[in-house]
Length: 597
Image (cartoon, rainbow, N blue to C red; front, top):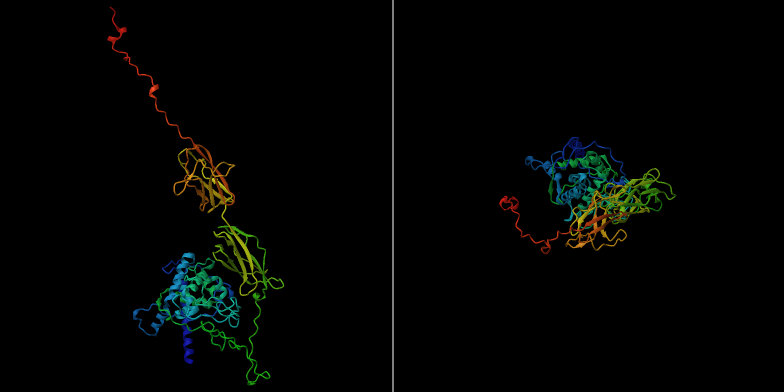
């Protein structure tokens, strides 16, 4: 035991130095003026203070984590390093199980496409995976990435940990009393419920699958438009995962270690971590390792009721055995006092596709007596067939109620999908009746159409119009992009029926058509119609353009008669050519010039 304690003390001194060195190295690599390298690192701003993150609004619920730190030596020892213990440790710590490593890199690739401004490095996922579960317990996963046995953190019952009562009815963690962090990235159920992703394409979002969990962790770290190449945003993202400065420094240590080099090892052969942040959380109780049954509270054997006091009459047992002292009652939190949610004056939630909703969802948390409850986290979730998001591109937003008990959700940004959906407001960490809000996205519309250009289109019968018709759509004075337009050659201003003579368009087969649908303005509200042709009918015609929203424009089209051909001369009506000889100019033959006799 003494040797073990000595080893732990020596390790503590060494790992403290590792943490300091790694954080310093990371800060140096992200100092102002640094350039982007092949790992995606670039210059950073000043570090910001840790966010005030409630346990039930972090990814892990601030659950315990592994505190083992990387060795001081390089993760890529030279071949001459030998095969001693130090070399083996460096190689073992730097190795990441093949399937786990593949999941991290796939998540990075997906986020590079979905959220390129986040600059998520896969090494950050590896650092968090190492600290949370020892890379899925050394890569003990099946071929599809699912852990061989579930990885569970201790129950968050408020006794040495955060207090988070059950939010999933035991669906993810098997615990109907309290929540527990689940899977290789240690998500609590209430967070996985909205952050979960399907990373391996099997149609399921499983927190016990490393592909799903790694992708979910990437999206979680990239929310709020954070740029993880900036030191301040990187710190905020890590602290939002588990709000602890020690946790931050531990993750940064592994991040820098993996950035200096790593390699792939077979699944199931990864180095297992030893030390956890809750080693002394419960004196006399061995902390549960992920994948095992969490320990019971002191004095409460797991799976049984508290034993009666042996000193009580009739209980038997030794009277010298001290009675079991129950743990002190946990004082109620503001969340515990919430009885229901009420709408706090939200107006009509309607917006045109591609536009921002003018109204924002507003919810009030109240006690049973109707008293406002402040400092309660309200989760707003978009429900239904919609591509609308909150500002920042997320479908879930969590907001803390103010002194009046009101939480106002971020603005809604309408997508292109029209129709109705719902915004569901619920209390984080408590099962109380929520409030659904109906929202509607309408089709893009224009309230005005104008002809681009000053001249009205003109052509000759049987020909084609030299210039195509161009129009611009606007809505409330702004360009109306992606608005559907219908073009019809109508009979007259008073008769909207399709004309059967005059100008026409051509379809794909070259046949004449006088009505077009499916036209759309571009991002600037501009639309250029297909080429127009004219049949042999001369006159004035109308091209009517209409849009969603009621905008209408009649364009006058003029078809001039074709020029009459020059007539051919008629030989029967031409005068006969003269047969008289031309007058002679010879003086000898001109009588007037004959000399007198």
